[in-house]
Image 1 (cartoon, rainbow, N blue to C red):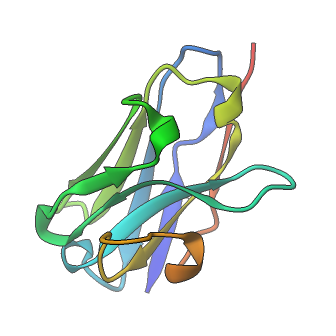
Image 2 (cartoon, one colour; image 1 turned 90 degrees about the vertical axis):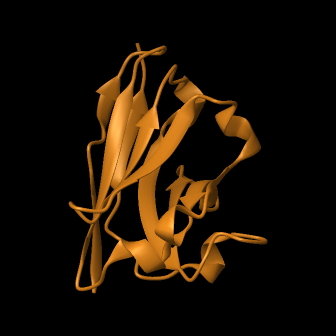
Length: 123
């Protein structure tokens, strides 16, 4: 059972990136998959979470409509499309799973973390 993140990189402010979270050993359709990020010296914070069987998505307030989480069932992959990136979005991004996205969805309630992918927003 694994999750593997990819798609990070260096992007200028205002740019876009699409992150991928590929699952193996289980199917994502019955799990809540969450994207989190962690900047140096800071705690891991939730960005977005998508529930199983398209039961909906939740977002952190700071996303402000800039990010979209989605799922490709055939590829068993969850994506995070990030638009209008800001320097404050610089962090390592991780995906994790738990049973659902309802209620409080903090990092300590998720497991099966991937290795992360670095996103750097800088001119």
